[in-house]
Image (tube, rainbow, N blue to C red; front, side, top):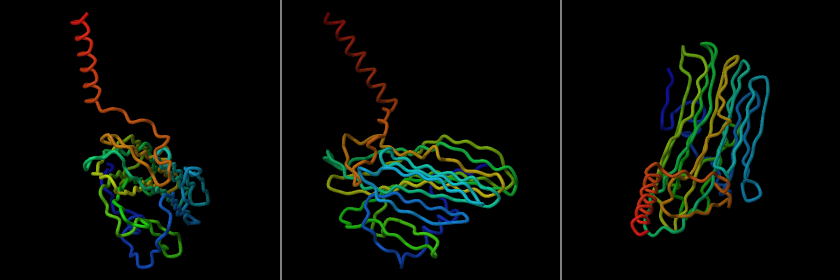
Amino acid sequence: MLSKLTVVSAIGLLSFIAVSPSAHAAVITERSAIESIILADTSGSQLLETGVGDTSFSQTYEDDSAVLNWKADTSTGTVGTSSYSKGDSGQTIVKIFDTIEFSGLLTPTTISYSLGMDGSFYTDSLFDSAYFQSYVRIYDITGLDSWLETEDFFGVFDDTTPVAEANELSVTAFHVSSEEGVYGLFSFDELENGMFTAEAGKTYGIEILGNAFSTGENAYSDFLNTSTFGFTDLGGATFTSGSGTFLSAAAPSVPEPLSFGMLGLGLLGLTWRRIRTS
């Protein structure tokens, strides 16, 4: 059996980072950035500021423990990670951070969004293990000069997170993991939905994460085919981002089935009226 949660699970190193004390965290000036973290024979992290001329990042790393791949693109709202273990373990984490301001909101408006995941993992023995985690978090960061901070994690890597003053409004997440005694190939094509209330004049921070881990002789967790974020209903609003590129190359949202139905009724009514008046 596989476990699937639609809330962030307390698993692995990432959960320990999330609850580690931030007494030594340092506020940083970046408002829009991509962070990558790898954990294998060699471990470390990178933080790249994003902007109009620098919207994406991808990289491959290989050592005696694992083959790791990761990528992120602010213009499409996608992150992708994979870990192929070679007798030991490997983990790769990638995050997108950006800021958003909405225009055209006359009253507080519900903004709807989706997070789609497409990938698979494989274990071929009782001693293998694999998991994948993805989430999107929305924060109210109105009035904050800086909304991100970085903390050294025991000299192994730097971890970037929103500051404590950032008010989390919404979290939508997906997690799958292998279970003891169960092995084989498992594929996933999932879509999770979320929403939050936006107001004119406020600034919002968005964090999108992908996290792949595997351990064993031939295990892998491959979600390099991306976790993709997108707005599904802006309530008539438009938005700008701190990077100037967030979702600028994303595919347009598909109307809900109800919207198609209403469109069909409208066309039918128009046709009937033309018949009557012809």
